[in-house]
Length: 88
Ligand SMILES: [Zn+2]
Image 1 (cartoon, rainbow, N blue to C red):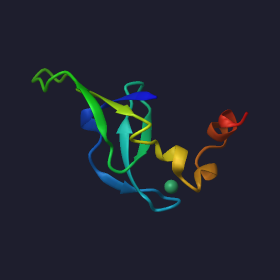
Image 2 (tube, protein in one colour):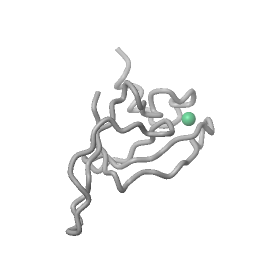
Image 3 (spheres, rainbow, N blue to C red):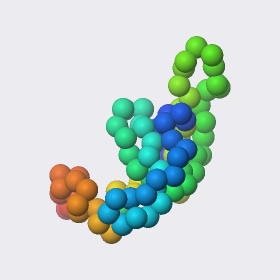
């Protein structure tokens, strides 16, 4: 899956509150914030840095740069509804 994130919304290493793995938060173009396994690997960048405040969008392939939701061993604690949606 390809996710679109804002270039300016990420770049700082953080740690998962549950499993303490290194993660990196990024804001999706939908406005939602999502933790990725650190570091985020960007596959494509859209647009150039402009002076008018336009935000640069980056594409992230979740096959390469996985959401930490998907790999966290404590993900059940993160969001119950998110996990139930994944069940068959
Ligand atoms: Zn975790």
